[in-house]
Length: 292
Image 1 (cartoon, rainbow, N blue to C red):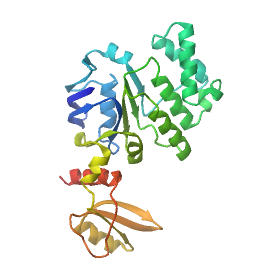
Image 2 (image 1 turned 180 degrees about the vertical axis):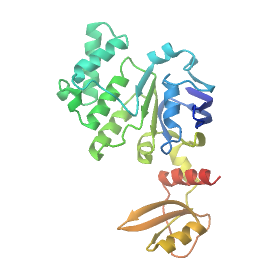
Image 3 (image 1 turned 90 degrees about the vertical axis):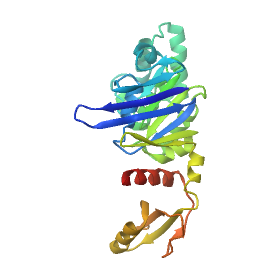
Image 4 (image 1 turned 60 degrees about the vertical axis):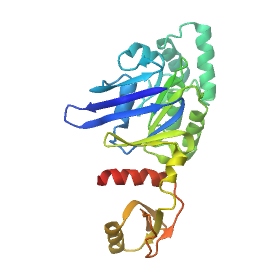
C-alpha cells in the first residue's frame, strides 16, 4: 500500500502546486486524473524523489519514500512525461546500460532480463535500431521497458499516451495492463479514456487539491440519471444555456455544438437524457470545483 499524507508544495514564484494531498493507493493500476497544471506532475516528481515537498509524507509498505531516496530509487520504475534517450544508441545497448546502473551487474542475469523486456514491450525486432529512429509509441514502450528493470514495486507513468496515434495508444495500454497486480502502478493523465480502460481506482486533482477519489464505476453512480444533452445551433442559445444550467462539457457533433449539463430534474427545452460516463464524472467535478 502506498500511503500519501498531506503533501504540499509551493514553488518559488508563489504557485501552490499541491495543497495537502492525501491518498491511499493499493497494488494495481491507479489513475490520477487532472487538467494540465493541476499538480499531477509535481506529485509524481515528489514520489520519484526528484522534488521535495514542503510538508507531508509518502510511504510504501513502511518505507519513507521522501526521507530514504536511495532505497526508493531501488524499488522505483519511472516513465516521466518527457523521456530522453541517447538517439544514436540501440534499444538493446541502452537497456543494458540502464540495467547496469540499476545494479544488475551479472551478465547472464542482465541478458535474460533485457531480452525478456524487449520481447514483452514488442521491441525485439527493432532492438538493434537506433533509438533516435523510433516512433513516439516505440519510445514510450522502451520507456516502460526501462521502468520495469529490477522488478520495481512502484511504477509511475506520467502522461504516457499524449501524442500517440490510436494504434500505438492501444499497444501501450495493453502493455500497461500486463504489469503484475502486486505492483503499485500510478497512471497520471488528463485522458479520461486511459483511466476508464485500465484502472480499478482513481482520483481527480485540480489546482493542487484532491477533489474526488474512488472506484471509476461507482463514481458514475453520483451523476447517473442527471446528465442531459442538447445540440445548439447559435451562440445566443449556447450563452443562454451556460447562464441557466450547470454545463459540464461541450462537444462538436456534425459541426454543431452538443452541450452536456448536470441537472437533478429534467431541464426540458429540448434536452435529452443521456447515459453518464467517466468523462461526465471528470468534467462535473472539475466545473464544480472551479465554481467554488
